[in-house]
Each structure stands twice: as structure tokens, then as C-alpha cells.
Length: 242
Image (cartoon, rainbow, N blue to C red; front, side, top):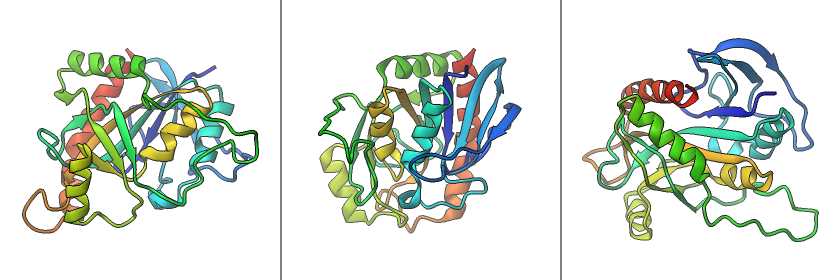
């Protein structure tokens, strides 16, 4: 049974290096997942791939059925999740096309269905470390093996979207300690924790966050940086499964 899943975000709706074995549509108690679950082999290791925003990319961050996605992966026997996401860079070396392996999250999202325990007895999960330390260590080691420069730490701030942030919001997030800004990190990480799944993220910087560079952020700029960042992400994933 496959135990590793890769969730692809903006810029990664399919994994070109994956030798596809089968595609599955699942019905879940929480509704429809974002896309079909694609089982395949990456460097002779069986993995399941899921496009977080659908394939083609059509589901906004606040509309993603995170519970259906995570429940479906659990149903298929997944124990370890590598979640890839495009983000904005806020601090230091978090420049466009750079890759970070975040170690913490601050959640600024709202109104999302964020737990599997809504109707059960009150259940409090420990989210002190939202990302699996073991998976993070493996990703950091894989990056070194593939000779890819990464940031081994980073605080991911999850905003609601789908709009990008204001410059003042980014300044507030920087004061809060955020290094990166994205829109999908939560409740995905917490839901994986609730189902006792190991979860780690690969954050691909698509642009400087609002106010961190001159002028407005354009989709052309984002796509240009994502092309390079996702190419390195593919190499990182291949080294990870080796």
C-alpha cells in the first residue's frame, strides 16, 4: 500500500516525472476532493499525487475542500504527506524562485472547515510542531544531495485569499515573525495532524510579498519565478524518494 503522498499547489497541477499506474475518484463523508488521486511511481517509489487546486487549476484557496483531500489520502493508506505550495517571500533570503522548508505556521485564515472533530467530543490536538520533524529532516537532506539551496527553517503565514495582501498586512505579518505568506497551509497541516499523518511542506517563493519590492505584483512575474522554483522542486522530490 502506498504510504507517501505529494500535494501539488499553484504551478504543480501534475507531476511530469510520475509514471502513472492508476487514477481514482473518491467519495468522502466531507464531499468531493479537489481532483482525482493519481497513483504512480517516482524513481521506482510508489506515491499518490493530488492537485490541491484541481487539474486544471480552478479552485481558489478558500474554496478548497481540505477535509475531503486529507480524509481521501488517509483512506488510501497514506501516512506521509509532502505538501508543495507557492508563496510570497517576506524576509531575508526568501527571494523569488527560492525554496524553503517551513517549521512553523501562523494562521490568519477564517471561515474554513478546519477540523474533523466538529460533532465529536471536544478534542484538542497538539500543534506545537505543525510539520513533521522527521520529514523535514529528510527534505533538508534531499536538498543537499540534489545540490539545491534551500532555507531549512521559516514561518509560514496563512492568509485567506484569494486576493493578495496589502503592504501593511505584510508588515504586520513580518512583525509577527512570518517569513513566508501563502493561502493553503491551514487547515491542511492541522487536519493531517488530526488523522495522525506525518506532514511537511515545500514552499516555493513565487514573488516578493506586497511592499517588499517596487511596483505591483503581476501574474507574469509569479509564473516566471514558479517555473524555475518548481523545476528545482521536482529535483528535490526525486532526491527525497531515492
